[in-house]
Length: 589
Image 1 (cartoon, one colour):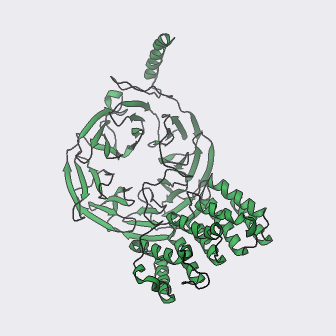
Image 2 (cartoon, helix red, strand yellow):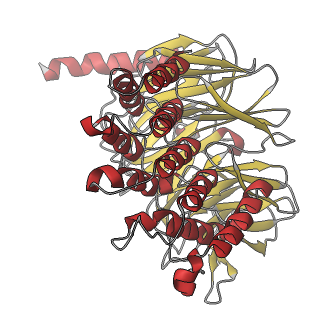
Image 3 (cartoon, helix red, strand yellow):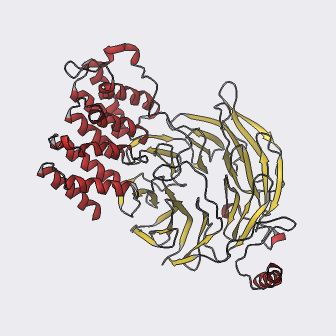
């Protein structure tokens, strides 16, 4: 039976080649996996022209249209939501781990839209973003605009801003230490940490692409690719200063580049792909993509119309004319898909779907990989590569004072200093020390020697410190806040309602809880012996639940809604039940 079908398949392939229909083509002379399908699995009318790459997260795709619309579709092709901006919008779009979408207008207004299309917040930074917003490991946002970078929490609170002195010329990337790497218009290569620590080195010219390498011994290292084929490695020397080193040049202009686990893939202008070794930069193998003349491509790929994705499944070269996949270990070509009429570079998802916005004002989805990415996940998307250590920071610089750091004068001094930095929006390098001190004060009740009769710190002072943690806004501190909240119920110990309220307010202000730690703590309130709790603490928990749900989609949103309904159906005071009901109604508006 199989032998009889081979000629029919070959005739069908030949027919499609003549008609120019989208087709997976095997690499000549290589054993290639058979294609799944050459046709879109679904298409949806957009009602506008796509600008920029689709942003993928939460098993859905978000596209920005020139007409000012932001539209989202599930991976199955269902329309999910539409958000309209009443002014010109930039093509840059970012999706956070929990599904929040960030866009920016030409007038410089950054807008955060939750997973169901509801506006969370907006702020004007004065000028449009010059590259996509980058999401840090704890949900913080790095917003590039002109010569400046603004660092904001997921809820929009300012952590710091930096003026680099020259406009950003090569779009920033997130490095393997959770900061940014970029090149300025004055040919400076700049590393900007999550704490606003800046390192620079002067280059001879501007590269086209930057690739961050896996840190070796905690050291930064980067490949820089130039238009003339020159390649440089920038790394930290023994004195921690940045050093430049020349590597073997490429045969042609690099059109795109990407890294994965100490290997770097680069696509050349003629459409060939090469895998380079790290740190030597030597070519390990070369393959032909859909863009090469040998594969009926143009052989002249514009560097601004190409992208690469490199993960544990393989290396993928994407352009407006198609996508090609390779196995990284030996360069075996897995498949090749041609696309006609694309208005922008397509995007390839962790679930194996390719999304392409067409000049026909349609969104086309292809299933090109049966393999999903093998990623560490919690309730939401992939877990971040690392942590900033704010969940358990080192002891603060005030810990050397012992118990004297808890006297009212010291606490008031520190609270005032931190409050001043928060209002100025310039936390910067002090953030770990501030977080550590606030945790030391706020978490005293977790100590086995804590005495509610003769506490070292008054309740009101601890509550103020807890609320400040909310303004610092790192989701890495959510487990700490949830632990304080749950401590009373898990251990039968005392905790003042004001502390519970403060924890709820801080959690709601942070807004993101990707592990569900806060909602799990809030469920302790439903225990039968908690009906007589202070109503204000119960209402604060209901408000925080609503805030978390606003930032989230399923499954956390489902758990939050069930919790609010349980509040309404409980034996809580009427004022609490009414408040829980109002939070539910707010969610459904």
